[in-house]
Image (cartoon, rainbow, N blue to C red):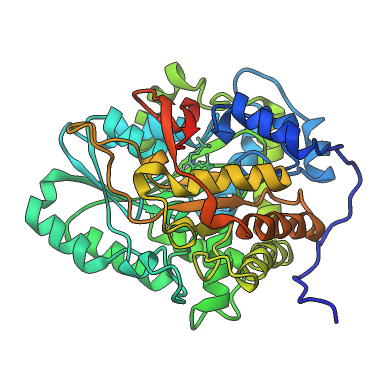
Length: 461
Ligand code: F0G
């Protein structure tokens, strides 16, 4: 009997990149050199790289063909107009500014929309998003639904806002102390979990009531749209484009990392629905940071690949395969007893390391210990999303509390096959055999900011 398949690849392979698997002993040495921090591994020492889905996707022949049509004019490149037309067509937004990646959009837009000491409300801030709120003098607050914290129980929309908490918070601090609301779709930190149309609509109603604007953090907007089609009543027969249009009908502006659902290796977008005055302010601000407003840090060829990638990213057949592939990995892992955030999200399987390794306290980073064991057994690189990433409270210097200790297995788009995913499952099978003996980690070197990228650790003996 064969095992359950996921919807197969709606593409065939025209070009390949060789990858090598080094021996287990070599991986043990490589990890030691990397200070037990997979971020510091050389990518060549990794067999299957599930660190991120950001900029790691495979572009299509259509995108590569577009790269040859780059118009590298400083101002008014033809490819800018293709990108503008794609955004106008898909999102119904009038004004478009390219930027080098998602955080480029954040660094331009956020300081223009908030005053020092104001709060920014979000279902859950991604780390760079939080950083740009704070760099602009704001305070980031998350209002994720409680349902997301119970990893074992099914909920179709674990990316939703807890609407009651949002509204009581606004009442408590006063609407004038709130700058704007960010809607992160899908919600990366909760496990790539979608937010429902109903929840978006309700957040919009709250925003209108208190005269606040909605900014959509749009990295994985297309995956969110397919989840709405699959899980929300009334959208069964809608096209992805229709769903995206409705989602964005509630937004004032969007920031986008195009390195995810738009399937480019580098790129981002700022778009504004119809506020021309704000568009003009953004155009002024983008020049010294990202570049002239018709290129914003991108080459003409980058913009062409991005314009084409936006359409490939909303193709329903592709999206069905994509979400199916992630679900496949999640189901296979559940089958062998690995606890995961259930159901799986759009871009990754999030393993619940707190459940898997209850003997390692959060201060000793259980998900990081798991990442290291998985690398040693199979050459798979995953990433910790837990206390190690969360860091310390800037005021007290204590380890900040983290509700979940997760290991993210992030699937690049159009890159790995089902056999690769089976190798990941095999890696877990080996780790499970000695999971109770895994040791926690302590710092050998701990940087002050964004420590998880460069910290050096060692196992606690
Ligand atoms: N917003 C979300 C929800 C993201 O997931 C990311 C990036 C960004 C903004 C920033 O975009 O990287 O293009 O500057 N997430 C990547 C990840 C890095 O691995 O999840 P960027």
